[in-house]
Image (cartoon, rainbow, N blue to C red; front, side):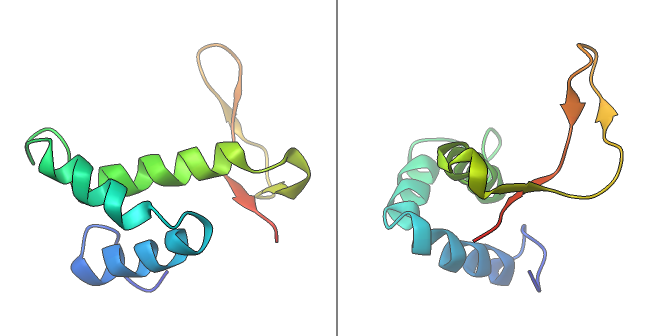
Length: 86
């Protein structure tokens, strides 16, 4: 990504990528923003949630991890950065 996710350019950049995998992305974002206060939810929060949703839908064989030893959370679960390897 070339731009910060909180900028207009960054939002557009992310929506363009997300829309390749989920055609309803922009409609979902619009609806979420229409139905919530900006003090409660910002556009980049909705985009983060969409990324998490789409990542959760990807078959495990398509997920890859960044190299390195991940930190663990309070339940000893690894906190890893994952990405989709197409």
